[in-house]
Image (cartoon, rainbow, N blue to C red; front, side, top):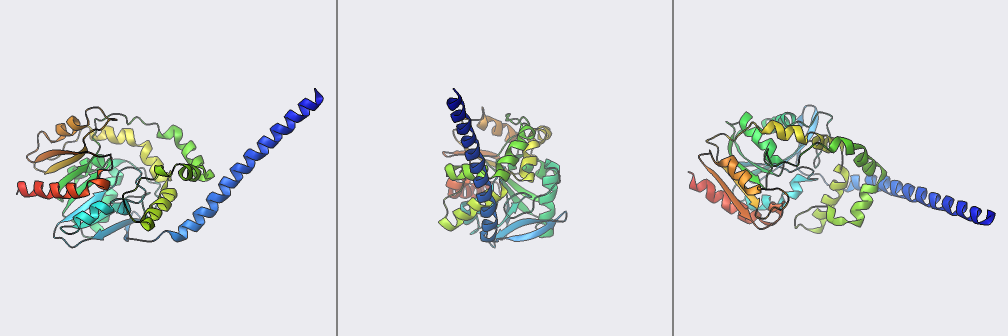
Length: 314
């Protein structure tokens, strides 16, 4: 019995030491990799000062009209994620991609990620760049911020385009972020988020781009994953969606939604968007076969359809 007990104790000790060693290795690899990748991340766009912080904005194209792109929640590098759409837009428009705080190359902020703050910051960035008349194009939760935006700055926005964009009444936005914040922070700081990405690389959502750009997206994803701004934005989901429930698009604003045809996650996805445009002078809903990131696979169709829509209402 004594030999058996001794064997069990030694076995337990070995297992504990192995676990501790594994955690230590994951942590050290993450620290070293973070420092190494920080030097490999390439700059793009330009920094605009907003509330004393740097917000990154890329501007491409020379068209007379400007399209301002707003990303969906957690998009690590919006300017790179939107590449397929930008490529289709720039022959006709000037395109400005906003990287809100916590996204892409923008700073992280400790300011609450309420819709009011996010919208105000985007507007301040555009004002600094002297962009005062534009088409607002938004993906996913950008639809919630965009709805608030067009009501506050109606005289500046000439049209709104939603790419599988969120609607205030879609449901499923209960605030669970706060209870999980500690878990996400641990995963990031311990290096286990990096390990999970290594084991399941499909977690990094990216369009069809060259290997160099894909690697930049991977590094920026690891850099921005679970940062303070992203986590705080998640905590504000419920209140941001509820605040938008009382809003409607201005009647005379042209609005077009491009939606995935077979959304299996949100009941009534298409009717919810049809409800948003029913009282507009110029409103339209179009569907495409594809996933939530329609701009990764349907950018040509999106731009062609949008141009046709704007021509129809002239």
